[in-house]
Amino acid sequence: MISRFRFNISCYESFKNFFKLFIFKKNEIFEKKLKVEISKIYQDSNLFFFDHGRTAFYEILSQIKQKTKKRKVLVNSFTLFEIINVIIYCGFTPVFIDTKKKSFQTEIDLAKFNNDLSGIAAILITHLNGANLNIINLKKQINEHNQSNEKIYLIEDCAVALGAKINEKDVGTFGDYSFLSFNIMKNLTSYTGGALIDCKKEIISLSRQHYKIPNKMEILKKILFIFTIQLLNTRILFPFFFIIIKYAHKYSVNFFLKKYRTDFVVTKEIKFPDKFSYFMHPFQKKLLLIQFNDFKKKQLSRICKSEYYFTHLKKIKNFYFPQNEFNEKNIFLDFPIICDTLPTKEKLFNYLIEKKVDIKSYYYKNCAEESVYIPNNNLCSNSSEIAKNILMLPVHEGINEIHQNKIISEVENFFKDFY
Ligand SMILES: Cc1ncc(COP(=O)(O)O)c(C=O)c1O
Image (tube, rainbow, N blue to C red):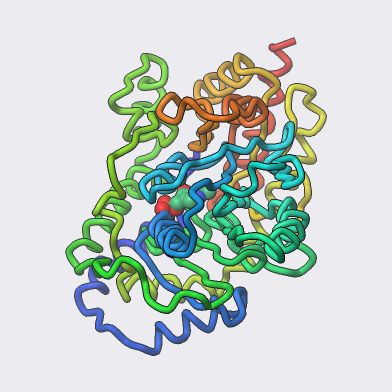
């Protein structure tokens, strides 16, 4: 049996990083090389590296806040709730936009906003595990609007879409600003990390002078934490760890599940938490640089595995597939399937756990219906359906055809009994 977790830095590498960090000395060459690699994607945009993607987003909004008095930000309702928090911490009001039915794509149409357009400072387009094609039309509409009105800024959230392209143009190069995340779940990772891409080269100085650089001890703690998770997910320990997971699910041991699962409670603090106000440490930049070597090869492998699931599962009438194109438009950190109803999803999830198949529920929410953000303009029923009924099948490096066949056959068995 295999864990749904396998990160782009292996357990053994984490072990080595522990020691490498001690002897690490800052070297400008790594930084330059990393900028060269990222510039291959984002051309000659300005780059700023932070310890989190959300910090990059916070800085983007802080920059925009200095330039306009408008305070609304249009944002996908189906996203990481911390992104909505950042909008609020920065003094803006989120306006939730639904996804299209059975899709990760949005359909923001400025024509529908009529007189409300004047309050919109920015639109954040989330590229969910691939390109959000809405960006093409939206960019045209924003350009037209901006010719004779106060500017609306276009921001792209590429946290889970690094490498996705639309007609050979990389996502993250369409808007004014975009940001990336390099947290441990991502296709390039520095344990935690993020980058701000300033496409129009407008940022002269950062608005928060007090971003700090983490010290080695802080990086060490991150490595140690991830290393512990990695150890629990190794082939030897995982079968034992899985027994705990299984019983925690069965008997709803929430204090444990809250630590292990990422889809729990939405919370909000009063201001942007200080623990996120950090730049990236140079050691983390070095880690990122190394991963560019096989970045494309790994991406291709995840696309192939996703297509394999799709080919075998598309006959199941209780599923639909928000990502069913297997090309450069999609990134596939996992392969998403959406069940027709919540009971189907829950029964299938529990059945698979029972059969020792470890799969993910998703950590994105339909933020529009979270009580901390209510009242709001729109409850976003399509996002609600997706958020409730989604499951993610693993496509990471450790998954081979035997694992995939086991998952597929268990899913098929479930539906045999189901009818
Ligand atoms: C869509 C999306 N946006 C933003 C972020 C924030 O990235 P970070 O965790 O690096 O702050 C994430 C992280 O998972 C994400 O999935």
